[in-house]
Image (cartoon, rainbow, N blue to C red; front, side):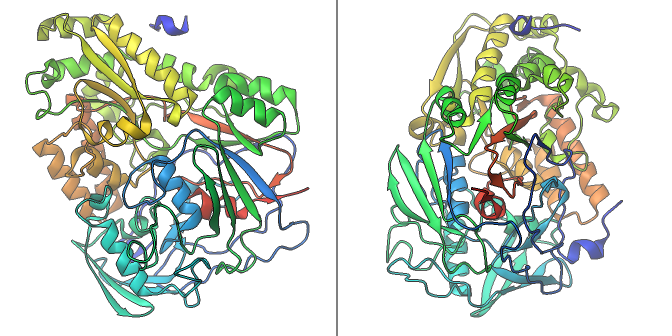
Amino acid sequence: MKQNYWLRNRMTRRGVLRGAGIAGAGLAGAALIGCGGDDDTPGGGGEASGTPQTQAVHTPTGDVKRGGTYRMSLAGEPPTVDPFVNASVSTKTFANYVYSRLYKIETEPGRDPFELGPIPDVAESAESSDGQHWVVKLRQGVKFHDIAPVSGRELTAEDVMFSYERLTAPQAPNRTQFAEVADVQMVDDYTLNFVTQAPSPSFMETIADANLLLIQPREAGAGFDPQATPIGSGPFQQTSRQVDVKTVLDRHPEYFLEGLPYLDTIEETVIPEYANVKAQFLAGNLDVAGITAEDILEVRASNPDFQWQRTPTLGMAWIAFSGEDMSPDAPWRDERFRQAVSMSLDRPGLNELAANTTALREAGLDASDRWNNALPATLGPIFWLDPRSADQGPSSAFFEFNPEEARSLLDAVGVGNEQIKYQFTNNRYGAAFSRLAEAQGQMLADIGLNVAFEQQDYNAQYITQTFVGNFQGIVYGLESSLTPGGYVERLFGDDPANHGRVHDAELADLVDKQAVELDQEQRTAFMYDIQRRNAEMMFYVPTQSSAAAGFSAYQSHVRGLRYTRGYGTGTESVMHYWLDL
């Protein structure tokens, strides 16, 4: 094998209408490795359905302990804490500690969340007889944080309507991700009618998406500034923030699920450098740290009491090219250029660089070596098409590492020595992302491209300009964790963050078809066609930093461990954690 030198059961229609949605089954369940088990009292919920449900009351029993401070790190300050004005990962992650949603993704200890579906959050139920008209009932008695001017009042349908209007406003960054919803009407204080554009296979996943309908009180904007004072009904509330230093979140004392969260306080300290994060964790000053693949065995050996949780790296890694409106005469207008870029990538080598795959497997850890397609490998086989499989067809050749053929294609295109910007952000996406950014840039240079590296500040340039397609040249980026339909809409639809401003008639037709297809097998067929079409043209070159699973290390006193598949960590995972101190 060539190596780069850098490394020398079909879902029924009735089932869809009952609201389970379609979730990709994917990676094996999270593995807890090392000492320390899981003593959390399992939470109720079950699958989201057309009949009203109430989650179990989470009252600590047995060995479960309430209280304590959970200590985390952040790579950088969020550009804003208002989720309706920015699509940043850090903004959405913070928001899901503070805000509730109608539905959320179920999590259980030791279970892969891609095998689980939506369950109620502040909604009590969601019912539909035709998959297009949905009646959503709210829980009664859900209270906002006791912060003026909202002052702990009850959440009602009026707040949901207000948040829907903010989410779908013309300037909102994620509005097209909610575009399947054509209309929302308030029936009474606890009832809303949603109408989708057509019978929808993904409505429940959409209202559970941690990127989208986060519920703010209707006073936001006029009564207080949500960028300065986030007020929600989530399990935690912000009590202090020192910009670029530390944020403190305290337990919401009147959270609607009795007994949750177990923790009293969360401290998020800004630590930009991975080496400092690792050192602070080893010194016992942090309760959790994402450990890079090459350090896992060393850190595990240093303390056998550390706990390890395998989690998929969220989102979809890609290389994009500036759109026709930005660079009409660029050589990447020719698909042969883009195919060459893909064939310059040593994907097995990149997996080794990102995930230390061979060594971790030899040590008994379940390290993934999957390759991303236009849908991420973490979605699993329902929607993800393995680019090395026979089903990929002839375009599988463009995923193989073949620098000789890549150089031939560039010669055929007539690429000269003109300098090409190769852009990526700083360490906000983690150390593995940064390593792969540099390695991939060198691989582009190895096939004869005159590459000018440009590392961009995340807040000032990358997320506000480059991510939304305002760039010249080539970009290496990372997609948000989205629903399957959300990914293809973002990359190939009218989403304002269509990074390469790709507008291909064949892809647009397939995106529209999958959005209304209730039969899972046929919808999967459309998704496979989307991935094959992108691979033929390589509008986006799928790459590897998000394909490999990561591992997080926890101190031995952290209990209740579980993980989720998106940015709902605060509501779906951390509120179940407790400290055995």
